[in-house]
Amino acid sequence: MENKKVLIIDDEQAVLNFLYVLLVQSGKFESETLRDSTLAYEKLKNNNYDLILLDMDMPDVTGLDILNYIQKNDIDVETIVLTGVEDVELAVSAMKAGAYDYLKKPVDNELMLLTMERALERKSMRQEIEVLKTAGSWKSLKNKEAFEGIMTQNPRMIQIFKFVEKIAPTNTSVLIMGESGTGKELVARAIHKAGARKDKKFIAVNAGAFAKELFASEFFGHIKGAFSGAHTNKKGFLNEADNGTLFLDEIGELPLEQQVKLLRVLQNGEFFPVGSTRPMRTDIRLLAATNKNLWEEMERGSFRKDLFYRLNMNTVSLPPLREREGDIPLLTGYFLQTACRQHGKNIKKVSSEVLTLLESHSFPGNVRELANIINSAVVMEQEQTLTKKSLPVEFLNIVEKLENKPTKENKPDNNNSTLLSLEDMEKRHIEKVLESTDGNRTYASKTLGISRATLISKIKKYGL
Image (cartoon, rainbow, N blue to C red; front, side, top):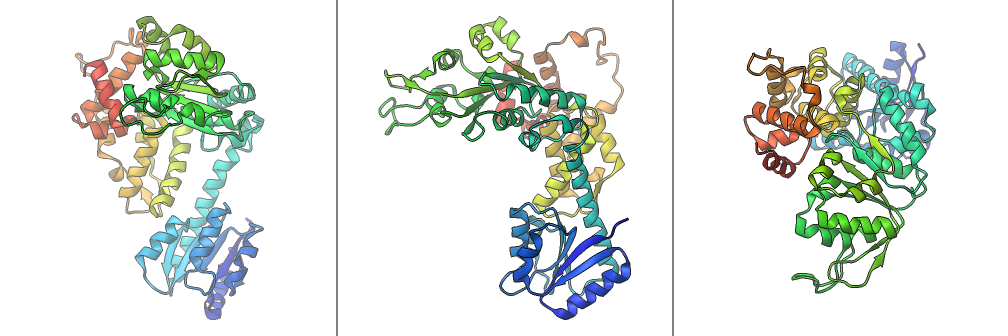
């Protein structure tokens, strides 16, 4: 196997000599030393190194300066920080800036070599994830960069991406459907990035986040004196997104009176700010998303058919995480890396027991729920392997309850389960999560991957 390239940066020649000899004797590394840290940026420009051993306390250009340069320029290299003083705040800053580990001088030889090997393992894992996007099914995509932030190796998801690439260059509205936490906004951003408006604004609005009486003012804007407290004119989201893309999430929550106004925008590009009798014009591409069954909403009369057919010119349906075979281990590794970087942790791998538990879970909150679980576990874990004891209690409660065999009273009717509507399924999921968390709405909302306010709204809706 080819030796890994290591750059040692330190302003003390004795330290450079010692580390260079240590690495040569190990027979695993091709080493280079640098005493003048002002030359580090030039050295790193070519991005030829696998690992850097970096002194923190140097004149002119410090170790933290170099870490920030690496992070800012997205240089794919692992860094182990060396320092002569034990400074907790400095260690945290270094880890947040991307350092793999923080070692105090004089370092133990075996510990140094072991830490280097583990750092390089993390780099290999990161590269394996990137390989997914340059080979196999990802290779057929023409705009891979548009799907930044979406991790998958599932063939069904790749087919969806291919469809997205076909509709992105058009100017038509798109309806994105899927459960909460499946990545609807990420797909909307991909459509924008792969489209003709990619250099214009992308404005994301959650229709369910505003009180009914506030939505019109925020969405359409208002004029001075339109209502009490309107002391100046205010631009709405339609103004902000002019010539760009407007992503309207949870469109199923939009009140009927606002649906009529939105339809007018889609038909002729006109709208009235609150309090104004003069129409304004806007040129937007509308992308809408929902976790509701809009066909059922139309039957109830709570969603307009004419608006639905305007939005439904192209539809993207995202599968839930439980149906994305192979993606849970992939996403778990990705979220582990992200959380370790964020919290300054040095967790190398996930135990097989944890992976088994994760793969047995139905994930009603989908990808967002998995990300929250891993983030919480990383905060709690004190070892270098993510173990069951660090998983959130509410998650373990759910898994343990689902593992119990159903009694005759609660055994599901397999003959009728496929006939449940999306809303009935959602209601059952929420009931199970609330039961497993003993009614704690904060824990339940985190598990479901939705806000506490949205959960309370659904509890009222379903009469739970």
